[in-house]
Amino acid sequence: MSDKVNLTIDGRKLEAPAGSTILQAAKDANIYIPHLCHNDELKPYGACRLCVVEITHRNRTRIVASCIYEVAEGLEVQTVTERVLNVRKLVIELLLSRNKKSQVLQDIAQKLEVEKSRFELDIKGCILCGMCIRTCKEVVGVNAIGYKSRGFTREVATPFDETPPDCIACGSCAYVCPVDFIQYSEKNGVRTIWNTEFPMQKCTKCGRHIAPVKQLDHFKETLNLPEDHFDICLHCR
Ligand code: FES
Image 1 (spheres, rainbow, N blue to C red):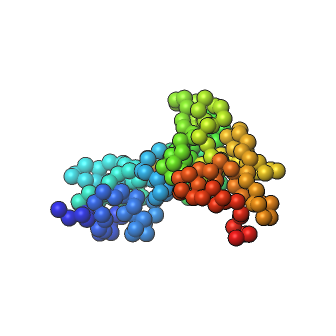
Image 2 (spheres, helix red, strand yellow):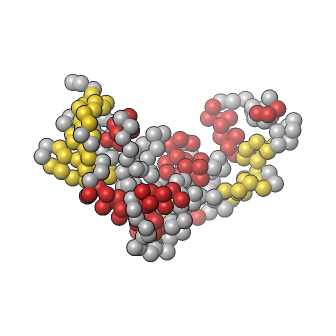
Image 3 (cartoon, protein in one colour):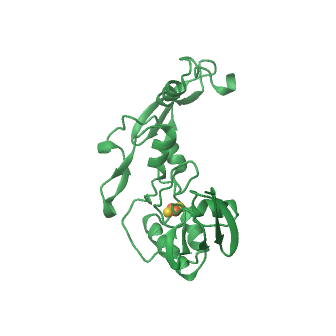
């Protein structure tokens, strides 16, 4: 059996590896599909629904999320149809209702010719894309944060809303957040994230703060590095 399949995207005939997603096939062919909760380093998740496309397969046409839908032999994909645009417009309105201030969301809304959201939700700004939770677990290898509650009150939180015991204060969750909702700060040798203060390690030569002690300990342990590996900062090496 061939490990490639033939499909068309917007009328272009393409070959894509079996098991890959429509979004991946489109990216490889330089066809743009908007997306927010997809990252090549993370497992497909399908939370934001911005990446919807219209597919026709075996005489059936429907709307699917391209980041989780696998390519198939004979699949026909349309990335811009009236139906697709209507769904994307609704999705961006819903996302904007969760975070009006996000420049990323505003830019996507502008491209979709959506001026403002019809929905008013009293939400703090998280769009529930799950990038932070998945990065923490799948990339950093820690499980410090997760979802709590359901429906409109669903949010990302630390266990029991307390100091997260497994957090190493690496800031990856804040880094990947597409709407800059997760904040952290650094002051006087302390990084504060998830309402918790994490002391930072000082370079033994220049005194510069390198990174949170917990983060460096995590790296030493997982990468089997010598105990003094991070005693000196990169500038002094
Ligand atoms: S990128 Fe596909 S659902 Fe978010």
